Image (cartoon, rainbow, N blue to C red; front, side, top):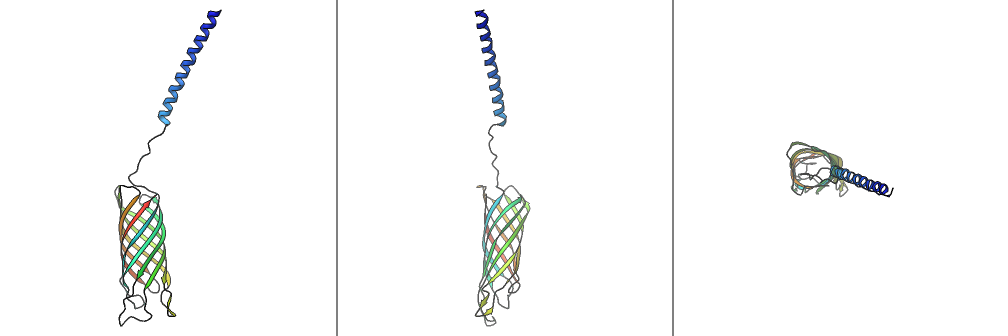
Amino acid sequence: MGYVRVGSAFVALLVGIGASGVAAAQSGDTAGEDGPKVQQIRAVERGGFVQMDVGLTYLVNKIDDRSYGLGMVVGFFGGYDVLPILNIGVGVTAIAAGVQVDDNTPPPVGDLLFVIPTLRVQFAVLTTERNFVWIRGDVGFGLGLPGQIDGADYGGNGLAGGIAVGFERFTKLRHFSIGGIVGANVVTKPAVGIGISVIPMVKYTF
């Protein structure tokens, strides 16, 4: 009877060892299938972004019989890539224009600053892995400052917008892209003014 008990215990030990081996093998297979995987690194990032525009604009027509000529344009925007070829953004564009004074310039005389809260939509018409050609549309509300000079109305508030073609290249830093925009800005107050702009840009995508 003692031999029987010893034999039974030995068989039970072998069965236990075998079951443990099968369980370990199954666990190893599962880890191989569902274990940690290397995250794929994309050539460019997509998602939320911030963008800075700094360039020049030339007001091609007179505003209230005053010529303003060459000015500076600055924009700061935050946005989101809805699709790889479509993004939307909101921000502020500022246009500073110095008045050109001559004998025909009516008083009052002063420079103009337009501060324009803006909604922006961009659609890519040509793309490669890192290069994008965009068509951009802006619509906003322009605040023309100063509103008055020496008690006389000067600036004014009204609709503003723009349309442009832009080129963007994503650098090998992935999150950063650089480019440039060529287009037209339009303000409606104190009168209709049209500016042709050339604007370098830099963007960071989170």
